[in-house]
Length: 265
Length: 198
Image (cartoon, rainbow over all chains, first blue to last red):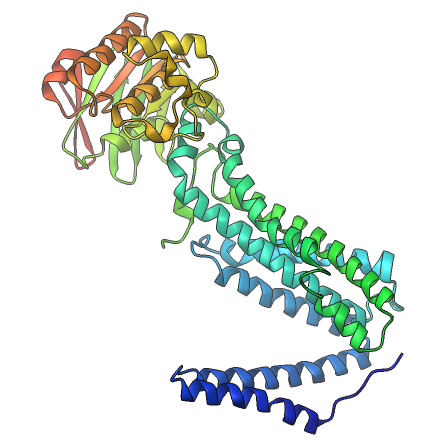
């Protein structure tokens, strides 16, 4: 059980590869030098900052600061969901629905894992809470944004089919069910695929990280399984609530389809 | 039977009129004058204001799906939610009789919706609405894609329903058809509704 620490010079040597990239771009006229430089600098600065933040949080072990960090992560993820929508809901719903569903799903699943399986002491120890939340958030975010995107574009595309059912006396839930089903399927497909491919096609980052840090592969694999279950649960809770919320908002109490509540393309 | 008072929405100025049982009113006006808006609004498919009642019962007094089964809107371009024609009809035996009356073959049940012609879609969508035995039919250019013979069949089928007491609002471009089917007329111009004779 040991891990090999990296020195700054190790990193400097590895960064030669990025310089190689830049040279290639220059020689082949790809025009990527500028973007590559900016992206690399961003990566270094952002990761360095997060190192400082995490180090501070881990030293403090404060429920308040850990909670605030978790909230900030969720709010950023909510922005990302909104940015990925082609046709957004109007008003507060645009940011509120995705963020609210993520807050619900991610906090439920993270608390569940912290209090019943991992059980660190204290339970809110940021060393466990924040990485766990991060992994759940990333995947739940993908699920919710895919679900909402498929729902809104599907309703715009199948508008006449949905309204045809409404005209003949279907309720809003009956009329929208086929579109909602497609939306949920596309929200859940990535996690299903990821579970099926894990271990064969891809070695998950968290598991390999633990192995590099000197953990026993069997223990690392157990952790990975736990994380996969948590991600699957979080994605399901988040995307089901987001799609239901979307259906609720895009219809009204008189069972009308309300595409006027979507932003114009 | 259908009483409409100060019905309005975006693109439609307040409209008031009555429709009696067994009566057919032609809805006329240039394209974009709001014929479709008026019919959609009566089926409560878009947000709108005003008082609409059927047999003395306000539409707000019942859930919207029940209202729409009694006041059925048939758009000129119909929507289909399944791939096979037959999936859109719950009671095929009754459907077959209406389908034959509209000069379509019973084999239409297994046709893919994608391959239907405009006229076939229009007639099948009408059948879908008639099966519900609505008290009021809101027809939006129901014969625009049909040849003369098929159009006559539609007119005849609707006439039978009128005899049985169904009220019909029939949007049409065709002034001659309006004269043939209706005794009264609603003229629409820039969202303005006025009554007249065809």
